[in-house]
Length: 146
Image 1: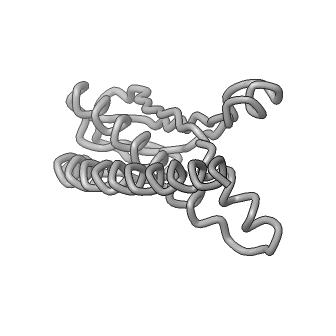
Image 2 (image 1 turned 30 degrees about the horizontal axis):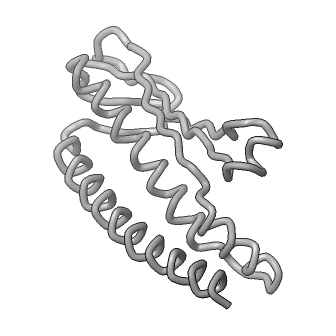
């Protein structure tokens, strides 16, 4: 009984601090996106005429699948439905990678970034993921022009 109560208390503490950290991170991302909104972002495959030399810009982030999210995801998988906790986590990762890409473009003096693409890959081997929860890298890249 004591072990179950301890586990529940730890899960509640994790939810509280995890939600708090997530809200702060989303607010930070919104601020950085607003600050970088002067850079034009498109998925055009070719750079329009009139721009300078194109340069590759990148941004990446690594996210961890923590035990709490995996626990809740397994419960949802039993009954079916969307795993919204993973959706929000991956959305934050996508936004973070894009912000880092735009920061790279801004350092290079770019006015626009074209042909933006995202790549997703798992981090860690299968045995490591079973032990520590695993993770993923989200990598963004594009063509910056001045």
